[in-house]
Length: 425
Image (cartoon, rainbow, N blue to C red):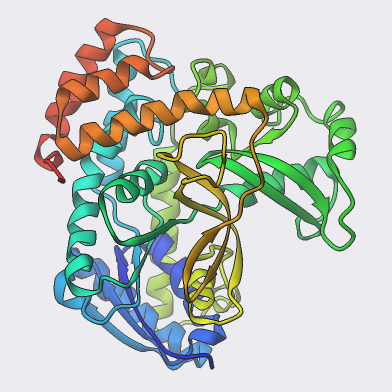
């Protein structure tokens, strides 16, 4: 054991993400004996996940002390780490973020992290995030804020600008791209190592190597990709051909940030499948809580890196985290310091240390600069609750193809989100 800590998990009532986080914490032996405080405003969901936490804790032998509460502020006292997985009225508002711009002729893919949807996700999410970090500044100012909530770039950028709290955002997008590349290479994903840099959902794989030998796999990828199923990831591959590197993390996520992203499909998120998957998971959890066997995969790590970050921050040797969203400040030298970027990081007791892979190729940096500018304006619109700045963000966004549409959708989505939009600074 390397030590014990207090971990506060805000948004712990989420079944899908909550389960993954519990799996990771309880399978990380360095954290055994720590305190886990689960926080959620939904008492019923919180009770279910707390009961599940006790079951998994016992099954793993991790000896965590488990607490739960709907009161966030007192829960933060003494915390070393705060995990954020909060979201506001997720599916209902996400549907509006997608459908209302479409009504006004905006062609887009998901409506979550880019385009009008990304703007309004930022406008309604940042006030809640700032409520959390202001409480942290008062009650646990040395704690590390580990963010999993979207939109990651805008949250990390806003906190880099306006908070003293140490922050890292985490996303599994890099691993999604590694798996896609391994599929084309016809290799097990575990044998493929990737190193990427860029923005969240807009990283570029600067290196693709065979894990145990260091062999450069880019030549093999370029050869095999030419003959791979043309229906697989067409937008990603078009960018690969044009810019020479493989972008992360999927056509849908990339498409949110590009004027032509819709050309690879504009069906939007599959809300029906989401509901079906959640119902299936709910049934499985309820069966376990009724005395059924714990599924074997629930006794192992999920692949997310939250628990690894915590273990690294407690260990003198530190921990390499393949991909983290951080405030730039030179990590990617040809992007603005005032940007949120996704790069490899080293985490140790002194903090989160971005690993610079050097400048991006010039054309890629110029492509990303457009999105950096959109995100900078979106953050300012959110922290100031400014409809005027929100309109400016829309008018420079490459997804928005009409000033008239921008004004119309702004009015409608602003009204739908009015109760959540308020100044943060």
